[in-house]
Image 1 (cartoon, rainbow, N blue to C red):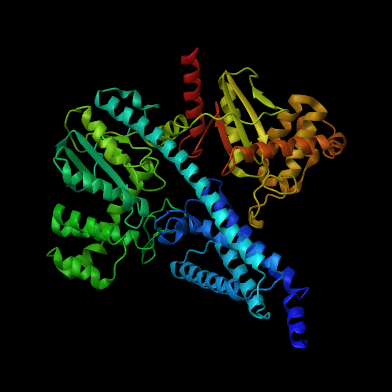
Image 2 (cartoon, rainbow, N blue to C red):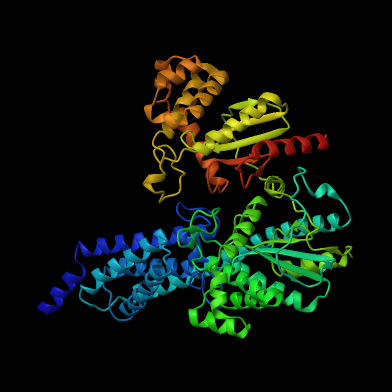
Length: 618
């Protein structure tokens, strides 16, 4: 009896129990963040080129058979363990301890995968490390029998949350499929119009030069349907689309196909750059795979290129030296000559040429597919490529030589991407601060941060455009990346991303507006944007002198509850729009996916297109 009593005291240790609950809560919340990201909310450190994104799209990122994200199981598991831990008061024996053992094994496997793949997702790391810390604290406690109610609650919680997430996932999947299908249908209409000689498919008049084709052709030189695909041999989406394309190539004789490379790989080895248009390496072997395909083409011509191309996709772009040697032999090529060709300046130059061309066409992620010179958007819809090829073929386009098509360049694509967006009704703004015309037919809304350089750049472009153009209504809304005033900011924003002077600047602008009206707000706003890099000096005298208001009055106004409320309401409105980054810019209710382009002013092009739309709708 004495031993039993001692064990109970150890199991219900007043320190171990809350610490264990804290570890599980951290693991649960980190998993919640991954689930939130899956449903469309961007997380700091989890962008399209991040480790989070890469792992989510790998074989480890989904449940076999169901296709649900692995994070669903993770969040349901951590929730179940937390429920059991709380209800059992820390008694983890029998089935619960066995379940914990399986969870620990899974955490160790996933941590190992992240280390081996060199893809360290911060939220995954936090979740699994917190889980291991919890397990360590439990294993040191006596293994007392778990109350049956705790076990039943854990099972019910796991099953219930998993089902809820599964239903939500299906609804989200249906919505995304619908959006992709709408994009696909718009693209096909443009393809059919282009086949009929309708040049209006180019919204701004910026066309690529003739000669749009790869180095190796599959199919007839002159064909009614011409497909050009930019790809990456390690890209999972590329592999799926490649399988669809290959099936089409096998059954159609009126189809011509060429391939271009866009490896998501910065380094080409030996200190050389492979793809200078990506910020980090996602696919370590993608550049060498592309060079291997080109080497096969150099030594063996079109037939060797295509055989190597298909082989690389079958192996997901990854191979051992012996496997590559075997493939080289099967192509009837000399291994030494192949190695020299693959490592030559020529193969790298070919990859560079494709990469630069792709970037010029506005490509950022693979695959990018063109049919008869028109980009196939919505390629991720179900059987999108096969159905689009069939629809274009049904329109009986005239045969043309591969290379005769002229796709639009990046700036025109960016305008088209904006035009393809579905219109949103943005949350109402009770305290509008309007630049331009209050009744302008082109409405621009920017969610931005005075300390963020891109917000300053876009704001400057819009205000400059207003000087020479009529009919524009510009409303700036606050979204400071600082939780001191932006309580709508997603949790987990890294300290390095916080803008510590953004809240101060937003308060200054609003207080200046309260003190001197709309004109004072506009002048203060302009000063703050133009001095965004110097806000850390907090030069209240300078901004007030520009706005023509009293520093004392502005300093007092910054303390007003109304100013705090205005900023917070803007922040909540921004979060409600599911903004993924700042600045988030909407023109006539349509979000602009890409705002910047080297050597081009995207805002001017979109505002001009919006003005044209407004004039035509009168």
